Image 1 (tube, rainbow, N blue to C red):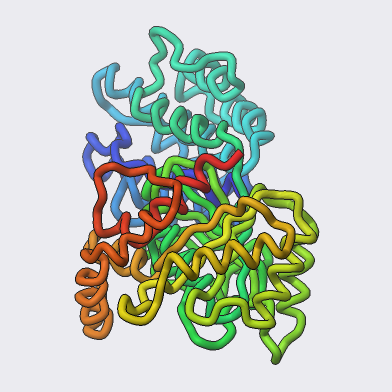
Image 2 (tube, one colour):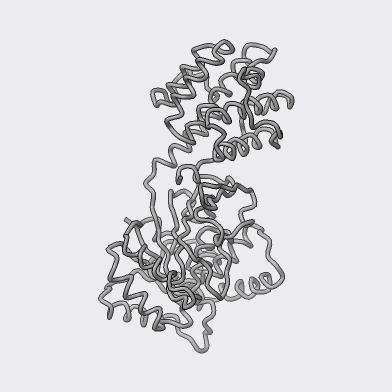
Length: 428
């Protein structure tokens, strides 16, 4: 499922787009007929096809998801009166798309695609085109010299393979309620996919995967049902089990999964805490981010979760002291708070802890502002205050750590988010 969620669904420079619109419609109809048949009308296949088709045509023909047993749409897509160069490009692109989309669903469909095309419609293109593509998808050819497969299609697949060849890094995020866990995850992702509330939010484990490129959002809403949208903020994590999107983050090039957990101290449903404790004990992750509330540090609930986390994992833990934008220079000492936090961790037998002072809210608001996301009047008012705060040395949160990664400091760096993202990236 992770491979499906993180696959790049659309292509902006498809070679077929240079042809006229009537042929593009024929092409998409043929591709829909193939995908409908080869996948047995699978819903995941339909979603994959529709997004790919939309990126070629700008819309998806209503009747494109069906097939005929004389393969009329496929044959129409493969026939066009034109010069031989364009005809070859057309055939190569279509065969490539058949292999590419089918193998994205299941690598075992590569041989099925080859067998189907060889048996059913071989008369409309040379065996050489089919064989070349088959070898390419079997790994026997890869950017082979003299290949007639369009470069833009090869490059698209190459970059996807290169991304998925990286090791997957799974980061578990845990906290008690109101520590700012949802805001922190939003800040790392760069989008508001977690709704921020003062009451309990997440009631289940939620897996959020980075995709290699900006390519919309795909979510699994349960029972193997998927929804895709170009509007990344159209849905919230209360209603999906896993998601794939391109992170607006220093982690944007990483193959990474952030695992969101329920608030461990939700008194109205003790199962929330049990879910979080079970996943901590399972150790099926590479590191933990423990989010502590800088305003109300070391409450009984938070101290209990700290104990449990330290005692039941052998993986690295990054401790985030959050909400430091709410400190007042006249009354609060960020340095003393960090020292007190470290002392508490030392008392719990966790020595030399990785501690990151942070304003997750500040990081999120500034990220949204920098990419011109919609902010309502209240958020714009808060943003103005945050800009003033993070222009003052007291709120240069990165200076309170020994992890001074950046020489060119920006207002976003001062929120502490850059330090956290760097630590995650370089965790071993």
